[in-house]
Length: 79
Image (cartoon, rainbow, N blue to C red; front, side, top):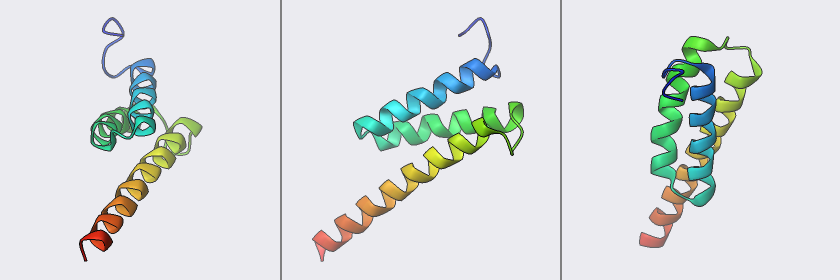
């Protein structure tokens, strides 16, 4: 991947896949960090109406919803 450069579509797609793996394993902070990096690259290489761009937005939304639910559960437990 280093041969392709950080702004190459394959690099961005692999970051997206890596972020999904972190999300699936419950490491939401690492997933968020990598999703943000992938999202920045996606903005420059994909059109906003493309399937790839939509995919990262869906997964990013799932991550934030999961983090919000977990935060609400912690708040409820502390009350």
